[in-house]
Length: 440
Image (cartoon, rainbow, N blue to C red; front, side, top):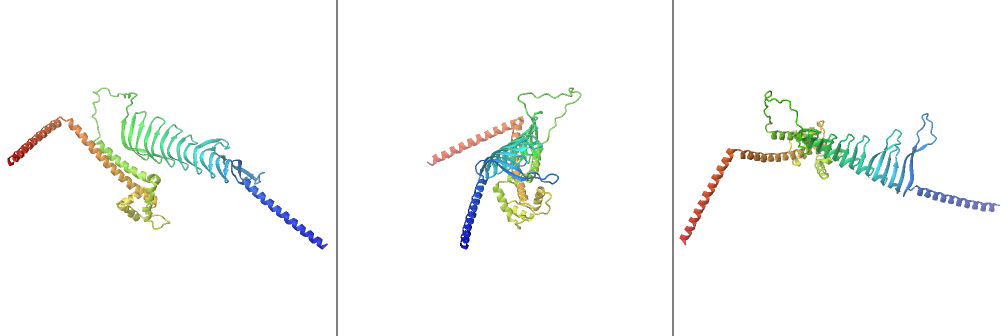
């Protein structure tokens, strides 16, 4: 009995070991199968993401603990969205287009839920994407009715583009970090248009404004979106005649003719005004233009090398005003301390005795370079003005009869002088020849 019992126990233990081993093997195969099914590769009909359901107002739980939050239908690769797919977001927004490594890449369109129940979709953007950001060429449809067509960089209009505003105005030109910067043309709904340079969404620098109704144009300098100095002039219309103004005084005996009033030395007045405006514009540009627009990458790198010489505490990465003067002298900018203080206050009016960071240093250098460029430009203008004055004086002289008579007398005297020199030279040559014959 004991032997039978012992054999039975051995058989029973063996059977249990086999059962447990088989069950373990089955569980292992089931895990691998589920893991394999969980791997997302190639197209999938729909993959849902869920989140916890909120409780009722009385604190009781709803019938379902979870609810669907987002949904994706499309291509996968290595558990990441790759290829073409449609993503439905928790706020009811929708994206359909290209994907790469789980991010929006390539061509795609983004829709936003707009109505109260967030069931109605409005197309917001269609175009190029890179790493989940609008980058490349695309079209943006704004909620207020504006529309932008052009280049993008990191979700901002950047490069050449056109904005059609809801009120009918149109801007075509350059953009920088979402703002009009560079050369551009703004055409107003009433026909007026501005051509010139922009900085931070404002007209800045040289530009011209054409008034369609008045047939006039203003050409000059702009600072902070306002015209500072320039010239107004009439524009001839080749397709029509200018309407005559109403004559209020027709009797010449009632109102005597008024003397013509002219500005004394208008060229000099305009030039001085331009110089003042350019100084004002220099400060504005150096203070508000982004550094990566003021300088190239190579220039920023060189400035950073110069700045690092004066940095004592690397954690703080700032320099003193004395260090700034030494760095500027090393860059061949011989400036007095008072002038450096003046530049610092223009860049940051609240700087006081605070230390100077790299951005402030770079903007001070921008002022120095801009002023040096303006001085060279003014020298060119002065040279051109000298040539212009000489030509103008010559034209006035040519119209003066006394000048013409004097010029004629000078020409006669010069011809007589040339003739006398010629005769003296001939006599000298004859004498030399006779002397040579005598010696022979």
